[in-house]
Every structure is written in structure tokens, then in C-alpha cells.
Amino acid sequence: GFRQSVLGGPLPPPRDLSVNVHHHLNRPSNYVNHLYMFFGQLLDHDISQSPTSTTVDNQAIQCCPPSNNSHPQCAPISITQNDYFYSQFGTTCMNFVRSAVCPTCRLGPRQ
Image (cartoon, rainbow, N blue to C red; front, side):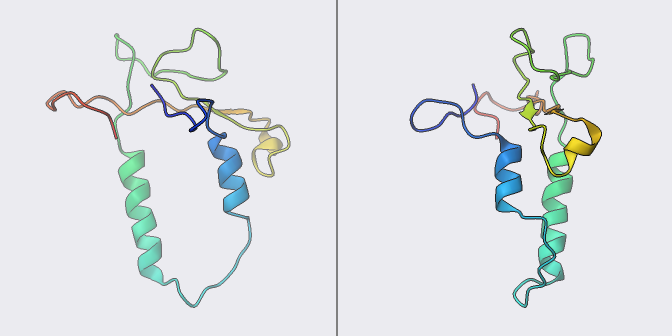
């Protein structure tokens, strides 16, 4: 299953954390150079190129809108209606599907 808080409840929505931690400001820094950007791009490409789980007939899994009978590999990201960016598009959910299991790996947690 998915991680929970130390109190056993759900974790805060990822989009809320992102908006509150990474304010939409242009703040030049003397401590960050181009290597910082390249490392971020490496992480982004590693994550975005990971194969995701599919249905038994190899179809993409749709997690939005969330429902009680969503696929077990779904972890949709809720977006508030007053989100500074997504509100202009009427988007209230981001489709998020867990990465696929490695067919040649021994069983263990997916990380």
C-alpha cells in the first residue's frame, strides 16, 4: 500500500506541498549553478521515463476522477479549485499511476 502519516492517516496532497514549498517566484541565487538544473533534469527524465503499470490487456490506467473502485495502482493527485495554475484549466485531478513491477527483479518494495 501507500505510505501514511505517523498518526496512520493520509499524507498531505502532493500538489499542496509543491505549491507551499516552491513558491512561484524568480529568485536568482549565488549558490545554485547550471549543474543544479542538469541534476534536476536527470531526475525528471528518470522519473518520467519509468514504465507505469497497465491493465491486464496492456491499456493505460485512468485514475481521474477518483472513485471507490479505482485501480489498485492508482494514486490520483487532488488539485484544489483555487490552484494558482490549474484553476485556469478547470483541472482538479492529476492522473498518477504507480511504476510497473520489474519482471526480472526479485519481489520487494517498489521504490
